[in-house]
Image (cartoon, rainbow, N blue to C red; front, side, top):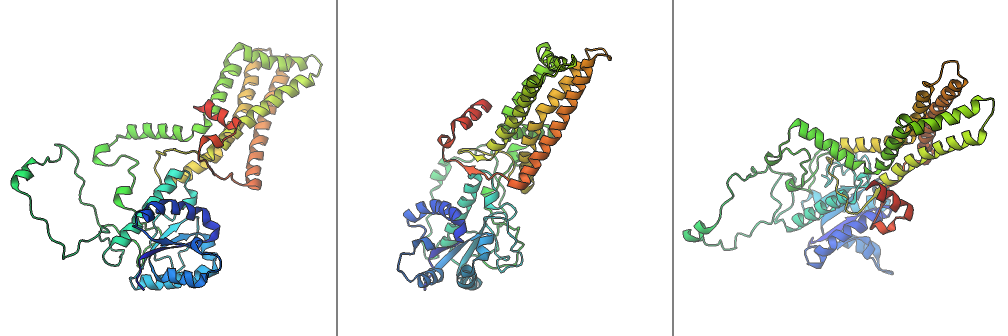
Length: 426
């Protein structure tokens, strides 16, 4: 049976990834460039086992959506992978692996198959839709290249562009007059050096799982290392700071409230007077419980709002977001750590600001004044509240888990409160 189709092997638990891949394959199918098949094309009452077997046997390219659920599927393990691996061993089919979720397959029979994306940065861990779509674009390009190649795809770095048939006539050379009319490259323009041979995708060849097929033109140049984009050390540091500031745009509301609160309670006389009034009311042998309770309740609410606004907005995948930081595993780990740490620090900061305010207000009193005792006591209370608040946030993370990212088709999906938060951070 002639192998001309594209077969997609996946676990039903990963259906959302399949749906996104089909979006990118649809234009190619409409143009007649790709004929792909997955089990969603099975009809009710059909002999589905025979249909799947026929689709596997006619596949020139097989796209494997790798995840823990993929390896846990007995049907995939027994009915789909063996014939596909045998066809790939005979150079009759090309296997393209797309790693969806963190999974260790170094000891499986797929460890020798090159992956389209970096296994250390699975598709499910990419934070923005734009990054995930870049992977799907690479998949479609690899599919087209494998289908259009004259011979079997090998992981030896051969050119994946279609090879013209020897029987095709060679075009006659143009007259010299016409060649002189053609414009050459601009003086001083950068001419890229010949690219090194890149490994082609799809054949069984012992490689490490981290070796990734990425077309050279699709590789990012985040640090500006190309000859046209050389940056000095200071420029690199400056732009990294700008990009980090843009990356953590969701924290700007909390940072703004901390800046305003610090200025008001630490430097303005009116703010310092508020703290003195809270302490002086208790220094005269009278317990102003409503005043103290209301003040600290407002302080706790300030901390919760700071933490929650940053935490919630961090995990929205907004449409049209363009990430400018390097797309590497180390940067992803740094960003993930900061996304957990910064909201907590913003939640703790109000307690520390007010605690410093109480200590600053105490300097205006004589050491024998009873007001000093209450000011220092309230400063200690603020410190204890900060420690308790931070500890509760850590426990909450362990009990509830990390908030999952939510993809947005449009900003209209946000409620009014989220829209107000977005408007406040710019």
